[in-house]
Image 1 (cartoon, rainbow, N blue to C red):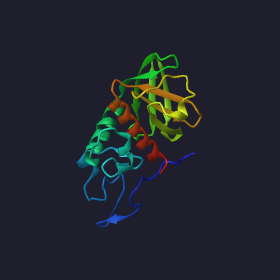
Image 2 (cartoon, rainbow, N blue to C red):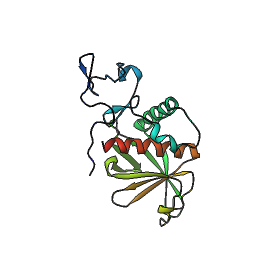
Image 3 (cartoon, rainbow, N blue to C red):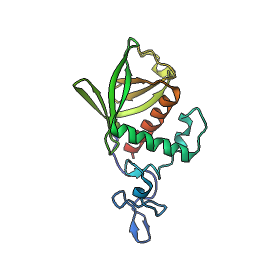
Length: 182
């Protein structure tokens, strides 16, 4: 089981005599995470997490600055909660309300009166599209889909209106999942 902890960057380092910590809001650049309006990901702010390793999730070329803005907006929407569609095995879409906790460690899926809470530390990976290794799923996947693969071997697939939205969901959720493993 992965443990939540500090994300990449210096741990316990100091700058201007003040320790770097999520609580103080100080970042390695000396600016406050609060003044930048950044969200926290596994103890690091979106502003300080390197998104370069996640750039391949997007089909369109974007600068790291653009991707960070996209992640920040995604976090804002998901913390508030947004309507999404879970793809059932028969191909039908089930409307659900999804959201992330402020600490970005639990993904909530609400359908009617039922709410399922999925700890991101229990998600193995997020997959965009219909990769070969998920071919055994009955669910009809395509480029508009993103699938959460849980440690329990269960998969939860979502279908989006646009490929870009599926790619962004995949990128952001994998970023947050990796943040839980640090």
